[in-house]
Amino acid sequence: PAAYPFEGKHQSGILELAQRASAFVAFTVTSPDRARLQQMLKTLTSTIRYLMTGRGVPYDGMVSTSYENGVLGPDIAPDGLTVTVSVGSSLFDERFGLKSAKPARLRPMDEFPNDVLDRSFCDGDLILQICANNHDTVLHALRILMRATRADLQVRWRKEGFTSPPRPAGTPRNLLGFKDGTANKEVLDSPEVIDQIVWTKGGGDEPAWVEGGSYHVVRLIRMFVEFWDRVSVLEQQRMIGRDRDSGTPLTGSKEFDLPDYRHDPYGDVVPVTAHIRLANPHDGTVDDQRLLRRSFNYSAGTDPNGQLDMGLIFACFNQDLDRQFVTVQKRLIDEPLVDYISPFGGGYFFALPGARDDNDWLGRGML
Ligand code: HEM
Image 1: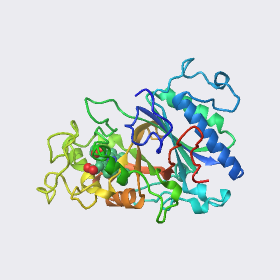
Image 2: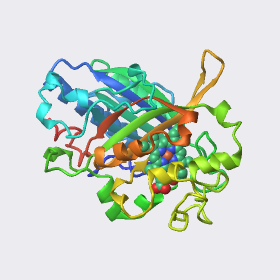
Image 3: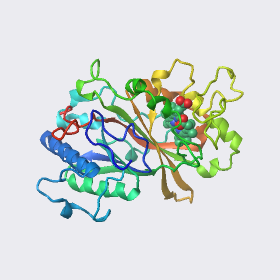
Image 4: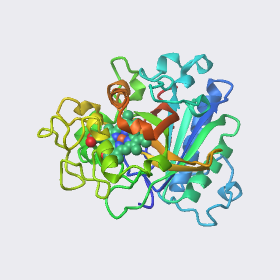
């Protein structure tokens, strides 16, 4: 689509199919006090509203023509832009008096056994997930947003991503050559499942304001593509559990067939250690652990050894970080795929509930 709505119960950039281009930009909040933090969130809200819908000017009293950087020329169209704002656990330290408002599961990202984390590529007080149909639209938005918040937000880390067009049809492919995101259909097809899987509920150990938000996990995962490209297609398919060309589960006949392991208890067709089988055994016991994944490919040049630096910006949304992402990630420890990938960064964030109307702003409930 050409444009997504900004206002709503939930933020955009979560349920929508991933656009072609993205930037994940994590920031340190440098606001000196709570009042300035509040002002920054209001500025962020009005600037995102302006970028996504063309409504409102980004700064009070400042006209958009002098504000613009020209990157999109004189006619600025939304171009499928979504900007999703999520906060990290460090925002809830002593600086802003927000300790009691922290979403219950939020913490610095766990280090899992096969991770080699570069902490300068981890965590952050706040992350912007900027997505659009074209890369220049993403960069335009990033520049306007950073200019509007210069005094309060300092970039901590950043990664830019893209999705493939249908090749030849169906779900986009990741850089291992496999369709990535097929199983999301199971979640997205049902409003009840979305409600049980994606949106966090207030109450219990969660503060009331989290209602309508979602735990937003980002994992930066390098792929050793030179090494992977030397593995036979059959072996690759056994590691993933799906046919490479079509994305069909090896137990099925079409991409969107649900995997069915009832007649394959010993893993003759889909090894019991295959990625999709570990991630979701489809035996009815782990349905509440499903994730809404929204990942992007990245390519960041070449490393000092001349190896291609590319991989996956794995991103997912979940109602309960521990019940869902962490449980699934633990099942994936030591899967055969770990020899071909290396998680090095990312973070646990909480996607704020949406801004309801023109007077509302992102983060209001939390402050
Ligand atoms: C499914 C690749 C990391 C969780 C898949 C599929 C592929 C894939 C090709 C099958 C198509 C689909 O349903 O999307 C990868 C690669 C990864 C990676 C290359 C790393 C570079 C992760 C991580 C998690 C995860 C970190 C979560 C901890 C899942 C889940 C499914 C899945 C839950 C769906 C399983 C199902 O319901 O059948 N992945 N994945 N993946 N992946 Fe990953």
